[in-house]
Picture 1 (cartoon, helix red, strand yellow):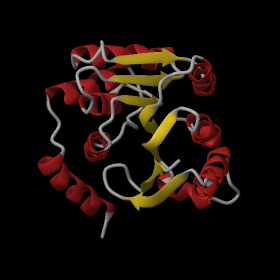
Picture 2 (tube, one colour):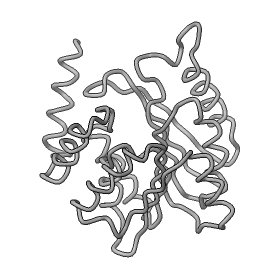
Picture 3 (tube, helix red, strand yellow):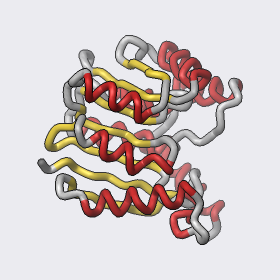
Length: 221
């Protein structure tokens, strides 16, 4: 099948299971108007994140890589009224746009967007003895995924989920010679598979996001 056919199937499924409301559409438009790259999760992927958060009864979520807050909205909507989401974003501009989108979605009081290098922010959360998170969504710079994985393992409870996006975007996972993103992703997947505290699965996807993939792990101990 052609790429267009995969996209058509994605749209067919999204129309039924993940229709975008006005708030989500406005978040995409506001991000585009601000010049942010159009690399947010697809509607179907957003609904998957929402569903996973509901499945584990998430009350605390940690997102690494906010961009314009599109995935943040999906995740925050899965939280109970007293839930909390912390989203880490390197770019101050992206964080400002995300805060606008979250305010428009009525979620500003539930979400804390923190600006800075994610590794430093994660170490700060560990140092302040942050309460454990129920779901981690990793969607940031791929070369740093291995470091992020080791840090978030100190911030989760047994039964929590770790979800990693873009594990094989465009087939670059097997790129030769490998670029830093490929090297980081290979190491991340090796670490994920070998980590005794996790039970993990990884899969490829096609559709609106092209050729890509996700990994999902449950914290067992």
